[in-house]
Length: 198
Length: 179
Length: 217
Image (cartoon, rainbow over all chains, first blue to last red; front, top):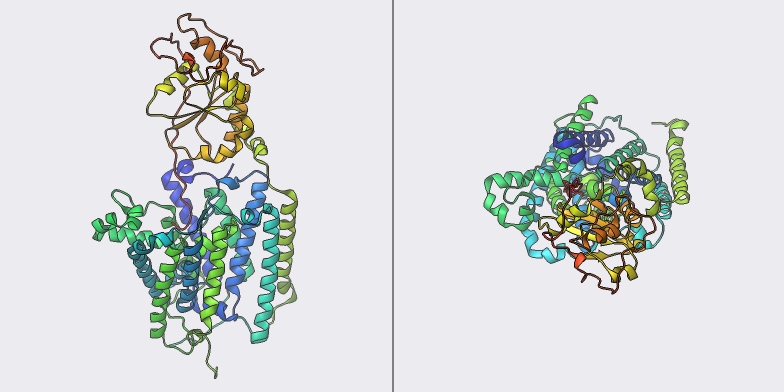
């Protein structure tokens, strides 16, 4: 039953190749969607171009449905899947900071790599900044270590929190996602008329 | 110098999203975890630091967990993934003629300003990504798909933070009153 | 750019498909932990039938004295039998309470070894199946012959009486116990040098365990 431990199953070298290929596909898809272009990315925050919302949510929802279907028919063991542990306060604060950074920088770390790969100079500056930011974090985290570990709820899933079976949670999210994307489209039309998404 | 924007043949975002979703599923299926990117950049940086100031790396707990003593910070899947992302992004751009030395920026500002803003944004992003223990690929996409509460809250916070300051920073991206 | 009708319809069709799949998922549900075994039975059943995971009492005795192995003896019998006799250092987890421990077992260190113990082998085998129905499988074994055989061999250290190789299926403690000695019975931890040893095939192998690293790194 999946998932497997690739390092053990395939050995270090082949496992690294697999990760490389996964990254390759990731970068390829991102660039094909135009996410190497900071203007296109930032336009999300003005509702000019909803590609970010569409790609992100479609990806999450499709992956989610696939994962839980695989789990439902016994192909994948959800108990064994890495669920990001929830650290409530640093997660929220980090998210807010990243949101602000997104509008300033016009990228997120993954897309900045794609931008840099296609020689967008602003992406290169962004990556440089990210390196500084990451370094700065490493140097200063000692000052607020308690905060960084606060709100530790561990492996805390939506179905745990809401007390609902997984299938209902997934269905609910898909419904909400579809409605949200539709509403965002309406909002865009209201703000900008029927102009092209740029 | 800003270029005239030529219509690009980008993929339909829903198609791209669906493909990305399938890739994400495949990744979880094969490896038991999701995607990542900021961690890879982080580790590459730490690897360089380890060459220059190894003692400092050994004595700072956050850095030591990755590269302290004999540990090799590059011995982690996310590093390979980052290399892959760079390659994949490049090949995709190259095939479509989008590999071009240029600066994308809003019409009201100069490329120079854009560079400064990109750098500042990068600093914030880098700091925030480590604070949140992930970025949009690691936390939002991957954590979101497996229903982690922290990841969904993170995603919410990113959008709240972004939309909150977007209006204030509109000069960076929006066309001015006259165009 | 005017978009043709068919292109505009795609996202709507996609959304409808996704909604249907999600609704189907909600209806289908997820497998119960007990059901998980059926998904891997084909792969793991041979290990049971070929007796690759049932360990000889002599090997068990060795393990109990081995300082390098983190041995977890899990006794899955009922309380009455536990009080009558159990192995020293064993942990009492009745079969119906075992499910909660599954995650914990999967996280043992590299030198961690689990041995399930019951009166015969039936319940210990059930426990083994339950715990192995997990993608992260712990290093688990079953005491061959159960405690009935153990007591037959070690409760009379000098008699050298051999007990039957095949275990019974009734899961009753067949060895007569006058008092409920629990782990104070001498056979709870027999003296290695006082018992007669015999040839056996070693079954326990330490597995290499890699801690799964997820997240962004």
